[in-house]
Image: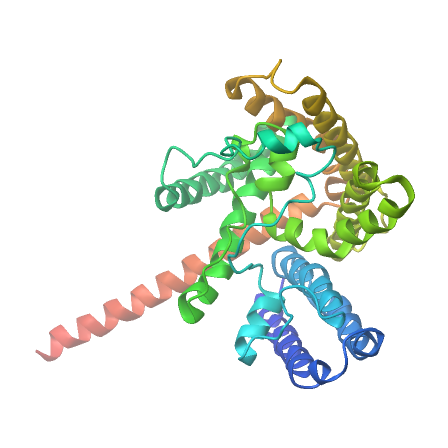
Length: 378
């Protein structure tokens, strides 16, 4: 891995991305919303789709693909029809660029969630007016949780040095924890400049998913909320509106939820292509479709049983975590493992660590020489 060349490519990719978003802000915004504006944005969507191919590392290439190919392109699709977080355009260009390409959502009144709505009867809606108990604040303040998660992530990195001695299932558990911790920390770091520079009050990207008491709670209110917030207006709402005219609002939520999960699976297939350059196997799509179907069954059971039978959180939380992890072993991870993506991630981490260590050592030696020279002169 040529680290210097990769950094140069990374800078070039994001300079071009910012230039494209400037076009969207100054020129596309003057075109009437609808198909005319969509046509003006299609070249930008195409450019965003090929830019990650210029990057070869999983960390920079994969994350760039997530920000540009998924989040930014979906936001631009909404922007074409004068919807979403970019409409109306914010007063300043840098605000527009930040909202378009960073994994942030400005805090506002929370809308109903696309994974919270299915099969709500009138009595169930009345009960939902009570204070929500499924998303309690973590017992430890978030300001303390972040350093703890950083320590856990470094412990996982260190465990990879003993990778050859670990059972494959233990490795998969480590990969699950690694993915969650690195995603949350990276997204929080990306959101920090928008919060610090522009003073945005932002929604959290994650809400302690290990505390989820159900699949509905996990996918709708805790895991990668940036994706949930972008899938609702782009996939869930249009599908629900179409099927509402055919089968009614209540039942229309079934194909809407399945479509949202299926699109999430398809986007993961695309991200996997940027990571592995291998054709899709549709395993990861099956993972998300399975979870969409299980979520629908779960919500239907909860609605039917109401409060007559409910698992204690001490039982439901481990069950949710184990179910998500177990199903990921068979369909989420195999495409990555088969193409050696896990090895590349670990090698990149060690390479970055060595570069950082050498840089620190070099700076320390330079400082030491300078200080020694000062003493000799004195």
